[in-house]
Image (tube, rainbow, N blue to C red; front, side, top):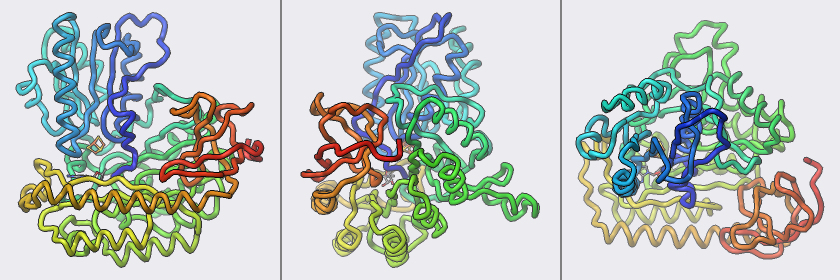
Length: 481
Ligand code: 5AD
Ligand code: SF4
């Protein structure tokens, strides 16, 4: 799914400016993908109306919420450890209530209440609008659960509060759920059916961000290429829509085109793309608009046709290459990143070599690589044995990571000696004297601050690099300011 798992952000507690008159304190922590972080902003917005201001201090909290991820077993273990910590704090502050949100809540449902005595409330990703009622329940001493998945909920009518924002870049969700049914993946079970959000509410949210000085938005979805709006309803029912609905429908390419045309100075990114759903008109829209960033996160998962089939990825290695060729032909300097799973059931050494050779062909700019983790309820768990020993999974993963590292360095080296536009996001983590920003390809660039400011577009001349970072010096402000 998403390239959006920022390891450094995992578990960050969210804080925002308090609303006056709000007396209760909410501590909310998020794990997993960017969609979860984005959902926590919706939750904070809903609870602000119920008298909660956020705090970053766990010990002060009246209500502790943890927005959870189920994608791999490790993600769930991290949350279990956090619950132990909350339990210890509850001993000092017995009035504190604990709620579990997100994918783990959806997967485990009321089992959570039995397994983890500390938990008072369990809320799935489509039930956040019910939080006011659920909080009342727990206030009165009862446990509360709502894990109903919806075919319509997009939270399009809720203005998320931007939490811990740099004021420059923001995420805007455009689709929820996923209908693809990859056999390894828990997401269709935890986030339900795929649905698209009304484009007008997307454009309204973006307008509000632009008015507040934001310079970049990332359109978010488990599968953005699948975006389709024809007045509501599931994608599978599109065939049954009226002629009028069909004629005025908005697909992802159209949404990109509308956004880029309306806000020509706004940088637009999107994540995640699925090879089987990405169409040439999306690539054409990217090529047409300078403000749509030249970067595509295009998970492949495996380079072996046999494994792709077992994973129910509905494309072949050859079709993937064709897509890569089309991207490179239309946008020669487009960055491409991957997700790869190693050690999927029955994966042979030959399958693994296919993955390595596919990587050689693409030479990805970035990558997110994982050892296969069997997830309860998925098709793979029901039909296949998790038969690749851990040491083999680990060795293959190391080989893949090492190769990715080589390719990343190869890619960053291509920028050395060139000048490129960078949007300043904030201070560099390593040095207070430097700014950190990204070029259109999403590569991190650091350079001395001089008199430049956060949120400015600056032309930077790159003189050096590592596999992950470009190092340079500002030349001047770009004409995009
Ligand atoms: N095991 C390991 N990795 C997984 N992913 C999804 N499900 C699993 C799993 N069961 C990875 C995929 C996906 C990314 C978000 O997480 O590579 O694209
Ligand atoms: Fe995001 Fe849920 Fe998938 Fe985790 S399991 S990456 S939280 S959609």
